[in-house]
Structure formats: C-alpha cells, structure tokens
View 1: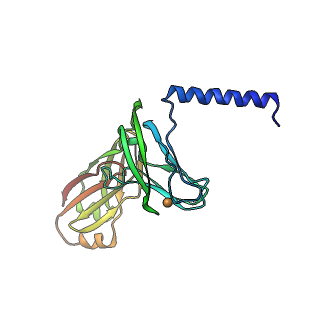
View 2: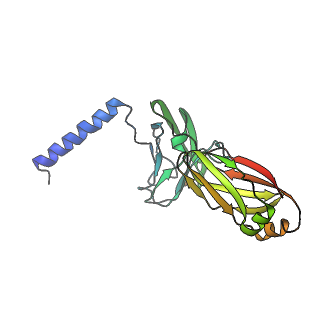
Length: 230
Ligand SMILES: [Cu+2]
C-alpha cells in the first residue's frame, strides 16, 4: 500500500479533477445526494449542462427517497423524477435531459416539501435533448376491419420518444390501447389496437362510429387524431 505508483496515480487523479473544475463546463449530469441519516438532500449546489441526465445518489443513506420536480411538464406530470430508491441505491432522474437553462425546485415526495433542493441547468454548456414528440395518423379503414382486427393507427416520432401509449375511444368507451411503444427519431410504426370487451360491444351495432385517438407521450405533448369509421 502507498507505493510510488499509487502516489503518482493519486497525483494524476488530483490534476484531472482540478482540470475539470477549472474547465467548468465538464458536467456529467448532477449527482443529487441524500443525507446519510436525516430526511434531507445534501445542499449541493446541483448543476449540470443542457442535455445531461441527473442521478439520485442514495447510496450512503439507510432511508427510502425519490426526486420529484415541483413543476409539471407538457404531459401534465412532473418535469423530472427519479423513482423511490431504497437505502444504498442510485436512480436516474428522468426528464432532466430536456430542461432549458434555469433553476428547478424538487422534493422527495416520500418525505414531502421539507426534503427539497434545486437543480440548476447551466445554459452555457451542451444542448438540451429534444422533447419526445409524435404525430398520429388515422389510416382509412372499415368498421368491419376494426371489428375483426382492432383499430389501425400510424404513429410517427419526430424526435426520440419512449413509452408512448395510444388510446382509441368512441365517446367515453375505450376501444383499445397500445402497449408502451418506443421510437427513435423519425421512426414510424403502424399498430393495431386490440379491442376491449366494452369496445367490441360499443361498435357491434352502429353503422358508423366516430373514433378518437390520443397518444400520451412521457415528457412531451400529447397528440390526437379522429376519424368517422363506417
Ligand atoms: Cu425522502
């Protein structure tokens, strides 16, 4: 232990660390740390560049904690969040890669507003990941076809989007729902939403049905389309 080579290694590590501090822009995403004992976050500051993803470091704590932004994003859900981490765990804070420059308040939803902090996005570094976005198209199809194989939907992602959920409704009745769909930027998929039992019943008799599609896009705006199917 403590030989010359390990001292050199330590010295080099110190030089590298000093370089990153001096350079000032070499963020790898903020690491939000929890107190080992108290129900608090360490004071930070928590700063990262545009487009970077923060992590919740709960590794030294024995308690359960999460991270939830106090402001909502375009999907009506928190701008960013990390799921509940048990003591010893580290979790990704999803949504931070889409943030514009600014300071964003967050809390631990498990312990309430008393456990809070701020995440600052430094606008002079990097570029924000484009928010997920999709376009929905409702291809021509007959009611007979829908009864047989479900509602046919075309989804095109303008930017990378994941866990997109498409729902088809007739009035208040849900006809069918897609699984969580993942897309790379520019990718499109045509899927059939299998009919629910209630959906099957709702479209069994009418000669035409107005069907409304909506796509819920995590961290992005929802999309919609509708068509009268005969
Ligand atoms: Cu907590």
